Image 1 (tube, rainbow, N blue to C red):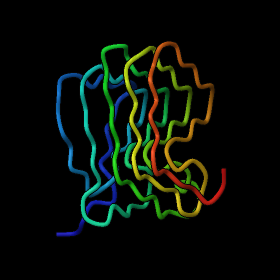
Image 2 (image 1 turned 90 degrees about the vertical axis):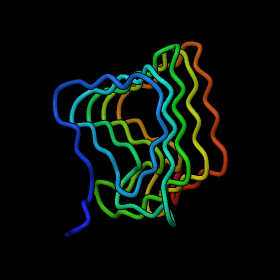
Image 3 (image 1 turned 135 degrees about the horizontal axis):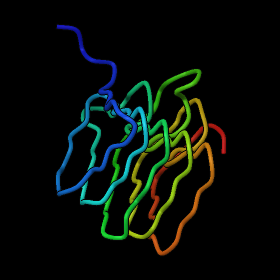
Image 4 (image 1 turned 30 degrees about the vertical axis):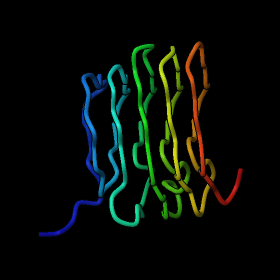
Length: 139
């Protein structure tokens, strides 16, 4: 069985709720918008090397006030269009309405934004963003 290159979440919008710990061996891509409203801890397994950010949102990203999203150990090794963003890559706008975004030990070895890259506007209201040990080749 061939290893999957990425997990794709289809649809125009996805709301992530509840509480979970996700051990990630392949990147997750949301084709549309993604709203995070729960407690989600994502940790890259093994050496953490992937051919994209751990989480990519092609549309808009929203972090709700009650949310806690933590991403750990994601090492984006990609070249070309997927090389930016170690932990999180948002193609559209990112609206942080509150909550807590934690980015630890993520890298974009050939691109920009070791922790996060946002293609559109970034709005933060009362959110807390903690980034530690994140590196990128540029920016």
